[in-house]
Length: 326
Image (cartoon, rainbow, N blue to C red; front, side, top):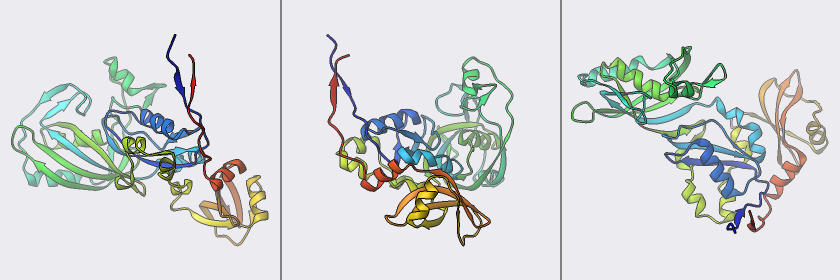
């Protein structure tokens, strides 16, 4: 007879968990682990983080998944180490060494090269990435030993700080802090910087320390989450509207709340705005997003009345684990 397998009794969970993703796990693996620990019915993330990278990964549960797209455009901040003199097949430590060069650059040349990579730059996406061409991920072509043509993409490097460097010895490196726009490939940035220095190189470490308004000091680890009881795990969740920090706030009375949730436009003394977060007045509750054009409040992504009620009541106490025979 097979041993009983534990089945999780799922429950409605609404909010955002700031996870410090560990090295070695994909974003989806980390999400599924957190989802299991919270026993959540519905979950998603706001953009992937490579398995070889650690750091800030906002996870969305329940109603928060409706607004995860809003966070995809957020600027990201990374701390990374570029190992100089060794070029790899994947531009990171996972690949095979394909070229070795002597490191002859000076500190002054490093500073000059870093200045060149500030502001708007163009990047060719790496072959070892999830970007798709003709319906197939680039890394799938790479695994088959095939290189395909990729169009350069425009990104912005807002800040590029040199935290530490070692240009002599057996393992020369640069340690950098990068604040960049969405879509920036840090592996490509590190490889391009090393190439501009004339020695080549690859990323040996990568950590995301910030995304949008969130920083790594706010995050919890999977180990910390595992060590919490049910109430502690729920308390670790941030409210859904943390995903909408720069949105203009509008509060509706009870009558307008009901109509708005039914998709009916409301009229009021509001200025035109493309990013509006809407709340009900009594009780105060997040209703969804909207835009205002010509004094009209036009509904966007809305919470359901059930989701609103669950958030107001907080999540109910979970059912115990059930064992089933398989």
